[in-house]
Amino acid sequence: MNEVPELYSDILYLLDRYGGAYLSGVRNTLVLALTATFIGCLIGFLCGVLQTIPCAKTDNPVKRFFLALLRVVIRAYVEIFRGTPMVLQAVFIYYGLPYITGGQVKFSNVWVAALLVVSINTGAYMAESVRGGIISIDPGQTEGAKAIGMTHVQTMTNVILPQAFRNIIPQIGNNFIINIKDTSVMFIISFTEFFAAHRAAVGATYKYFPSAVIEMVGYLCMTLIASFLLRWLERRMDGADSYELVADDQLVMAAGTYNHPDKGTPFDERSKEYREQARQELKYGRTRGDR
Amino acid sequence: MEEVILQVNHLSKSFGSNEVLKDIDFSVRKGDVISIIGASGSGKSTLLRCINLLETPSSGEILYHGKNVLAPGVKAPEYRGHVGMVFQSFNLFNNMTVLDNCMVGQIKVLKRNKESARAHAMEYLEKVGMAPYIKAKPRQISGGQKQRVAIARAMAMDPEVLLFDEPTSALDPEMVGEVLNVMQALADEGMTMLVVTHEMAFARDVSSQVVYMNQGVICEQGSPEELFGNPQRQETRDFLSRFRKG
Image (cartoon, rainbow over all chains, first blue to last red; front, side):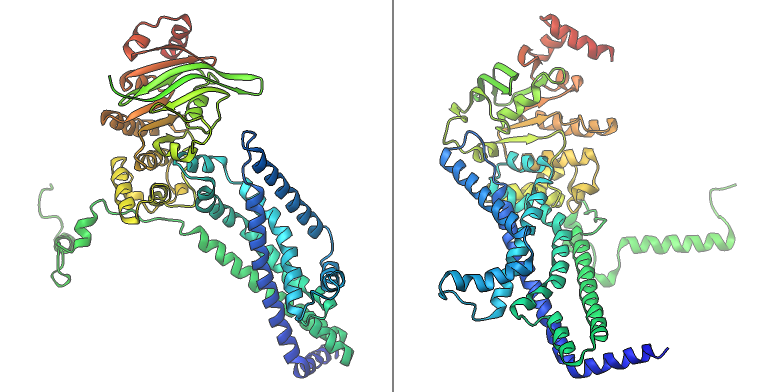
């Protein structure tokens, strides 16, 4: 049973020599996942909102044509980027763009390429989540908003999207956690995230298992913290379970006409009186009105 | 005679081949309280939803102060701002507090500033007895309370006409009274109201006119005394007798 101490010393050795690489890997992974999830959400919201613009048969043909075209384009985007592996999309875009533009468009920075790929990929998933979130809101909410004269845009921004957003937070969290893990495929375009640190470390030391342990623990920590924060955010958005009743006569309380803090209030007087009375009763029994 | 606010001419509405409203004509004058009664499926709610343009009528016209709101180029949201609506299922905005529900329309649609919107909202919330609950979310209050807030929300927009689509049908019996009281108070103040209802006592005692609808047409129309006291048509008598027995 000397494997455990050996594993321990191997891990210490790796952390000692490659600790900086692991840490910067964690940082890059988190920054990439966070930024790409955010941009992906923006893309998703844009697509989801555009897809749900109402279109009646009585609208003019030009508007209907553009709405239909928009839906086809978004649909194609979603299907293509949801239906192919992200590792391939990375290769496709990173090498493809310079290739077909004859070197006109080049990625000077691997960050730009990685952000682009992960954002577009997340956007494709989020587009569907947002669309689902919007159509899941009770049509009565839309009718209520229309009935007080709101336009479609006002209804969306004030009533529907805030509720849809609350409902798709779990989906956003899902995507964030998936991104933390799946950015590891960005090693294909030599982006140095957390998993790349593992490849570097084992390439030099051949300590595959100890490094994998570090990686497992590292990824799990990142995703657990992310889950925890997302749950907290959800609870915060739901607001308090209870509410305060507001006193009917606000002015009296607010204007301070009743008392000075040092003076006490008539309520204090009364409670003192009651306290005294109760004490007397306890001591001597009831004095008035009974028997 | 008071000025005509709404005039409905030859209004028809079909869902596919199902003709729900057939050639409806009627008018609403300032200060009228019109109750629309009739069996389920007779087209009462559809008529109300057509008037508010939540449904697009198949044919006919709706004149608001003499102008056809179905004409192309008429902005539906602007028109809806003048014609409030209270729904059977309340439709309060779930993401807002009671107070925000009553303020958002004033701020976004009528472009009032926050202070005056708040003061105006509080005025109506006090009237419906919901002022203490302004910080509550819709999920935290009862059905009757929700409906009273919904009425305050509609009234805060200062509509000319208020449409009620079966406002008490989704409520427990003990909550019906509180909502009807609020409606009666509004009627007494001279609010113009169009009420689709199954509350016959309300139709009889509060409204100035009663419309009985049957199978997509206005079957009979008159003052409550005429319609309840001396119905002319056999269908009306049958309908009313069912209520008297129950």
